[in-house]
Length: 469
Image 1: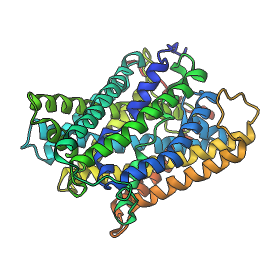
Image 2: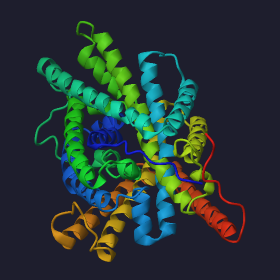
Image 3: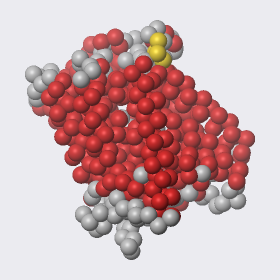
Image 4: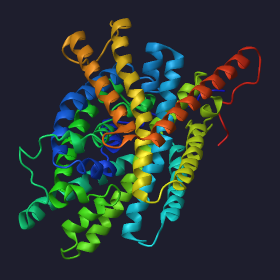
């Protein structure tokens, strides 16, 4: 079959907005603020030791290897197809696990705004409906689908700006709910460690746009520029947004699901037309939750489809639209898994906050693993392909690159440990067991793909790579 011509739909502006939409998470703002005022220190510290190095590495890989598949292609080229497949599986399945968490958050905020009597079952039903709307958004072409994250990024900036401005005026009239001083922001490990992984989680995603590199107009030029601009926007808004919530609500009273609307009401409800403003900002927040799911699904499904086309994931992931060349198979499978997870976890928890954090921590373990592979691939490609032109290169030479890689891998592994083990509470067995089962399922999927490839090589049935849609 003749490949569908790929249109170059993504310019620098689209890439900046896409990256802001992917990384700037309104949904985890309450989780990081719940650390207390020391979260301000952690944003600054981890921004320096992790966020900046991660941005530099992503910029070098993205413009030196602008390959379809992004993180999957980088790990595959460095360590071989099987490791690439493992990365691709973890990357894809994380989104399938995380989308239910983000849509439960959507349902919790919608309940606050519109349906206060809606129970957990109703919220799960809403989450399932949103999952399949996200699937549909993934099977349209990027000249259409890109507007979901683009608009989401704009709404996020508006929401963060409103929270920051509201905090300034609220604190001027009412004082600070939490003292914010140099002494108070000093880190306290006893209460901070559980939520520190949420900060790292909220910093990841610079590489996501590279999964759609074949649809960029000029990736060598635009990838590093878009990462620089988006990185400045993201880190600034995270620090100011966290500070704003802490200015309004005592840290111990911050709700992981309902903290955002609580903050908006506190800042704006007493103003003329304040309830209307809260409603509009709440609706914008709901849209950003949906756009988060779509943004990550676009990257995850395209990476999985590329791996399947290489014979490294089951052929069902490779099914594409004949007319749009979009990953129908990966998107539908993601929808099925997200629906199953929503229903199963919904039977095990008693509140939407419990459900959100359980799914968030579970997906966090799987989410962080591919980035360990990405940093190791960065160093490996420096060694085996050092002569390749790199329009952008991490400054400081190979020694600095190695040091930054070691630092970032240590931060990632520490965050994975803290998702599984909560100080003062012990091992989080649902998170650990779920993560192990998910990785085992990945190994089974890879073995299935290898059998399909062997059957095709010996004259068996051709793997499906396209669907007439």
